[in-house]
Length: 357
Image (cartoon, rainbow, N blue to C red; front, side, top):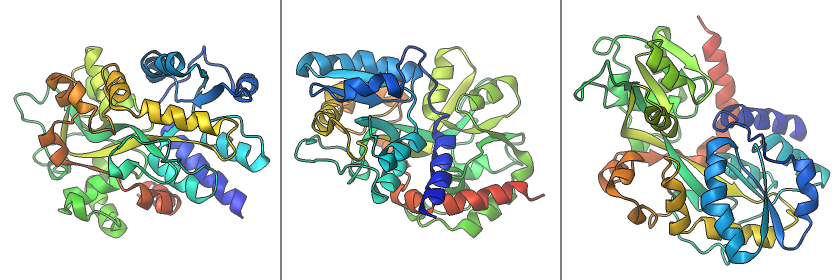
């Protein structure tokens, strides 16, 4: 029973967060990395791949290797089901993995992760993401996005209530085909304050979603919302901030609104019985420093979990990633513990709701 439940949960998490990254063709497989994992002066680092991992290697991993002499082998992509299988089979080959923070909470409770050694990991991060088994790596927001050619001069929706107002803002809404942040958006649209969302009132959330169900087009990959907005398939979208900002840089007519943004943290975890646990903790502490997080944010448009990192960015960069003092007042972290404990049951209910006519 335990294994089948874990398989379902692992599949749910993989389905959601394989969307974030794309494979890195130059990265070695877990099998080819296993010999490196056994060396005292090495560690195996698992990330999502693509441009994020390219930036991570350049801005974080190479400086870590130069400072410590520890050789880092990079494997992509992060794979929740594989980590669980390794731990259950006693064949752990990885030392550090980038994952969603709430998956880290879940996996830690199930015994698949090492506790973070806060005697080694001494950097002070946002309290929401400095947890027993996971340390916050970077932050992106689930936000209101829109076609900037259609909505000009501040005419786009600025709240989820407006996003759900199909009379004032007619047209299709692109939304993630997954309950995380979609249900929070529905509750805020129905008048629930950001600080009163959890535990989620599921009946109320689904009732609110019913009011715009016919106006929703669903997306399953992080790049899709900007494409839908650019082509006119959707006029508005619930989207990930980093994806919208990247699309902007590539010339797409898209923009975003950080008000009522839902902050999702990616995090660092150490698999149970990691071969190089001590080096893993050293790596997490190094990469959590203000200097290292700022270096990554300057390359990839994600926010930092170290409050001191923001001070090292330009004002333009800070505004772009939604981390000015004023912006942060109107954003919130999703509740990692809630989602870790309730994801499976909520996904089942969400999927059943999708099938209803």
